[in-house]
Length: 89
Image (cartoon, rainbow, N blue to C red; front, side, top):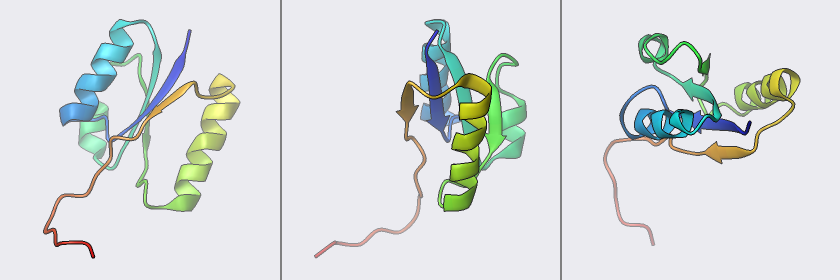
């Protein structure tokens, strides 16, 4: 069985991706900053409350996944930041 980490998979597009992957019998590890959303995902998913902008917390998450699963086969980097945008020069 393959192991997949999905960032921001507690709601929205990330959750839909996680559901499709889980339907294919992949192990899903969902990290998100929304603790309430993480409590509502399927019980067979592993979850972690992690802000992906925090390098130390991400490193700790990868260490935990390596310890529990032996590694990750795929990472879906779904996390994003909504807000004002401006042109990039």
